[in-house]
Image 1 (tube, rainbow, N blue to C red):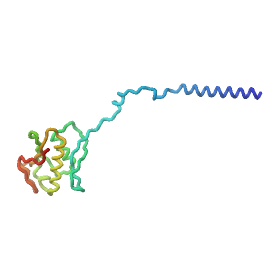
Image 2: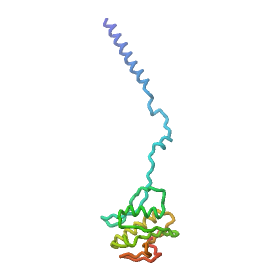
Image 3: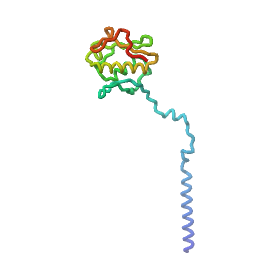
Length: 171
């Protein structure tokens, strides 16, 4: 009887192990054996956010620094870059009254009653003008020079004076 019970235990154990092996066969195949469609990556990938570099002022060091700004439009015009610089400077007292393009030269006209024309020391005025000039020259194709003026004519501020067609910066 002991032999029969032992033999029966071995048969049951073998049956149990076989049953476990058959459950493994019913599992779905590993995904590593499946082919991957490369085009699916294009659908899932996140869109690249395009940025543009404009210059702003670091008040602690009183120097101009580059700043990455999200580009919201497909526009590299003088007007658009001027708008980005003005927004990035975050100074409500700076007001551009007009932006024009004269051949390969950008002309920025400031409000004669606002910064940088009035209420601005010479070093801050220079930094503001540098931010506009560098940002435009670096980002606008076909522009090789930048001039400044006021809404009333030539650039005449509390600190400096420029002739009507004087080039402030060029590349």
